[in-house]
Amino acid sequence: MPDHKPDSVVQNWAPPLPHQASSGSSLLLGSSTFSSSSAPVSASAANAAHVGPHSKERIAYLHCNEVGNFHYGDGHPMKPARLALTHNLVIGYNLHKKMQVYSPRRATDEDMAEFHSEDYIEFIKRVTPENIHNFTKFLSRFNIGVEDCPVFDGLYDFCRITSGASIEGARKLNSGDADIAINWSGGLHHAKKFEASGFCYVNDIVLAILELLRYHPRVLYIDIDVHHGDGVQEAFYHSNRVMTVSFHRYDGQFFPGTGSKEETGARDGKHYSINVPLHEFIDDASYAYIFKHVMTNVMETFRPSVIILQCGADSLASDRLGCFNLSIKGHGECVRFMKSFRVPMLVLGGGGYTIRNVARCWTYETAVLTDTVLSNDLPYNEYLSHYGPDFKLHPPIIDNHSENANSLAYLDGLRQSIAETLRYLDAAPSVHMSAIPPPIATFLESEQAAADKAEDRFPDERRGAGGQMERPTLHDGEHGYDDKGHGHDHDHDTPAAGRTGSAGAVRGKGQPQSKAGEEDMDVEVEVA
Image (cartoon, rainbow, N blue to C red; front, top):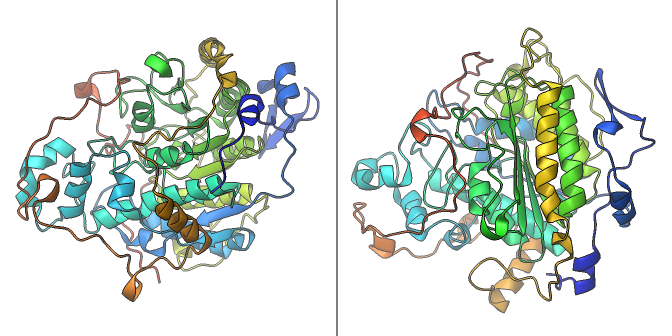
């Protein structure tokens, strides 16, 4: 692992801004054109952009074949099979040849307990569809076993795989082995410290941020899912080392009911939570306008040393649960824009419930990250039948009959309000730091750190005997549980503030919008 950066580097570092021609040049996006004046660059930002570009980004692609085999249940909108479809398109387009492909290790209980409570992780580890009746006392406590967050076969392993890949991606960035790391199975942004929420059980994003904070003074989290990134915001609501920026639908009732522009952080984290609440049917041009304005301002002001970008694909047009009107190219333009800053970046998945479009979107964004131009004709693969009748990478998913409810005046009001919030951070990046402390309770022991480094070097040789991950011995009654699920209640600290809206008025995430999008049939995928 690299040593901490010298103080002078921490104080003076600033990211380069996107390469743009003149102020009147334009960025082409399909048939739409966006003026670069929508993301103005100030003189101070231009002067700060002194870090030279990499000759070529090193990209780590983290994927576990088993992750596509999990099944939330019949009729549930969340379908992990979308990850198998995505991976097959990535392979079909030969994008894997432009990346270092890793089979990441699974997260341990200790890894997940860096954020989540130990008894919550123990509950996930023990509960199954067969023994759920023994855990009725804990279902409501942990918000599991409900419609949005069911107990399904392999739940614990699914959490270990998705969170382990995000942690591994963060370690690749920390060690300098990669400039960009991709984990499409991650981005599960609703999970809280003590409970599941919105199809999310373990918050891989928070775990990855905690890992990044070991070596980075400032971490920027960006969320382009249609739903507010409430779990991540809540986890770092009091921190000035993590800035969260979420672009999402907000009306006080749309799940999860949080994400108003007034939620800006508290205590040391005041002004470090940025929310961009949007209305229905926002289109490519409007989304690019507000995204580029806000993110240029954030990058100039906060000056992060690393970025996490959550690419929830439920913000696409025609999503089963979404209500935006973005094309795949419009969604990918956010990825392209953030990549142009040339700051180390962890790219994650998230929501997305019309799974053929999710696979198209994340494959296209993998191409954006690898600087690859793809044919619009999908390559042959074993799931090709799911993409009919057009079999195109960019199908016509835009609803031309839906009116964008986001006026230019509304977007400019958001932009100005956020700029005012960011004015309070002008002096923040130059704060003296003699050391970068980890946010967790203790440092890894030196032996553990050496083991982690070895795992980074040999990512595919981490299994125990028989090819399985070795598990720690579990003794009955540990963490307050016995074999029948009986346990002891414990008092917990209240999670960070930052929620607004009446819980009773917020619809469950799995409830479709009034405008029904395309629906996917339940997909059973067996991945070799």
